[in-house]
Length: 83
Image (cartoon, rainbow, N blue to C red; front, side):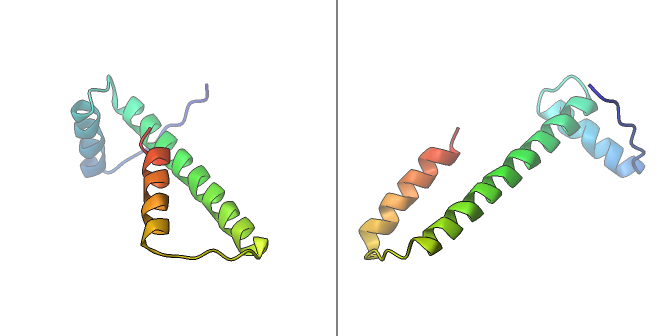
């Protein structure tokens, strides 16, 4: 594991400390690590979504878009992103 030292303004250092305590983490370092991990996952999810959108656009096949279609998609997305 690598070490990275950051200098933060007092207000941000206090915020990080408060968030770590609020989330039940042992240290501000754990909060920053969790925050960065969430951001990394978010960016990976966005990249995957972009790739799937590009694939869909390139597929050329058409589908009827109606209320049932959107309800089905909504349920799929909720299931995927609720873990």
